[in-house]
Length: 155
Image 1 (cartoon, rainbow, N blue to C red):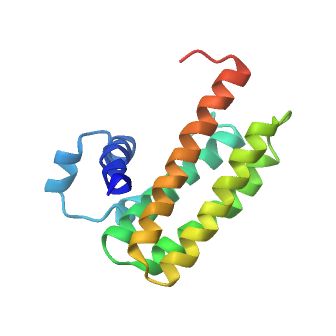
Image 2: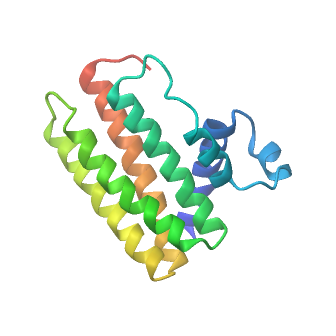
């Protein structure tokens, strides 16, 4: 139950990041997030993004596709995005000039959680896959906080 309550924090954040408005507005719009994200794929990459920023944007996209897939019982979509996230996470680690031990641990945890999500989605285990998504969000937040502190970036 406590993990499902965590989704109450995660879902609004994803809605705001993807749609630029509130979840109440997105509930009124019945189109699945996946359709909007696929439309965004047709757009050119934003100018001025570093390769790491582009990879992070892709991670956010696939996190949203997982949420969309789990919500709509599209387990194949959730599984594929979980697999893609594990691959993106490995690729992102190549771009870190001086990875800390904590970064490496958080990155490894995220990759394991993404593989767990893929497996649970293929098994159609909605409870386990949902928990994996929450765990992945926690790992993302912890890693970004660590990197801000490590690089001395103000909030």
